[in-house]
Image (tube, rainbow, N blue to C red):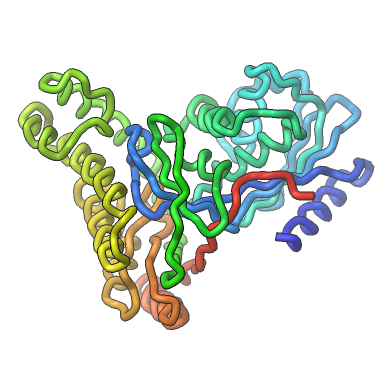
Length: 382
């Protein structure tokens, strides 16, 4: 991390040579162990914050302009600071910055003229939540140390993504980016917006494998799934009127309501209901059972929720046949991005080599490989 911090400071001074020494803020990406597409259904998720992060260096500008430079895209944007509150989306990376700025302004925070430089080690489109990392780190940079409740910070960044960027996401990504803990997962209750820390065993490694693809239908399909889940809730309420979200539905209740909704909508609901049950069971399960729950989660995402793709399925099918692998599943929104794998420590080196070789042979693509180290949440870097 120290090297990255030195790097972002160098970038800042190169872009803004007349500026004073910047403050630097960082927020991590995440990998979700289990609990996929349950967060916007107010259910349970079990992510870890990563040591991959987005860092934002910032210092005041003195000409009334708000400037932001992304090292990842090598692009600069600028606007009069006085116009931030009225800007419209540009349909690019800068929307995450502007959206967060607008939400802070709505909350009564004054956002003055600033120079920002951004660099992220969270790969875009990987399912490791590069968007939440930039949102949370930007929010801290714009706050400049001003107080904000941590849950409010996560909600504010979530609202920026929903209302300005236009992605109807749940709270998980922003929440774990704020609250992540070293060497621990956190089980988030997405209704109460609370969490409990979960110790991870020493005798397993968490390995993410990036397909290096992101199919275009991902964002549109995400919106369709949100709509289909709402349709399922409306049908279930005919028989169980106290149900407010799929979080409230048990498998027996869902089966009693199967005839009240189209088969497709039923299968979407079956994934969410069973996935919540898997998160609860995962907490106290053996490693062997956790691996089985990983695979069951993937099959549900593959067949019931239909958000997987050929590359993800191949990685899961291949990994689960390898020695030392407890289980494998896709993580993130789907249609590309990463799988997450539970691997015995002594098997990691061979797993990395074998899965990379197999994937490259099958698709002609070298996958990204990450041995995930659960890291801490967002903060200022001194």
